[in-house]
Length: 106
Image (cartoon, rainbow, N blue to C red; front, side):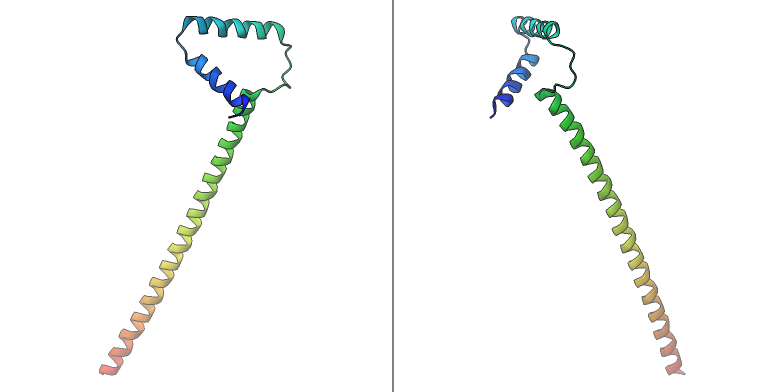
């Protein structure tokens, strides 16, 4: 586990904590960071990068799911066309065989 992962795990535990001392410490930390950090949106920490990567991955998953649905539709349509074509061939063949057997009976 990397240092960033350990820090994130501890921060996650702190956020879920009901301990008043931890809540006070988190509030103090946030206030200290707010007062001392410039408003530079270009700096991205591990949490911001995780949020952005998660959004990117969700977009990729939606794209993959959409592609799979299109493939399923094409395969289903292709199979349906083959089944209909096969049924039509069978019907033509069957009607030809019936005509042939009628002609031989006469």
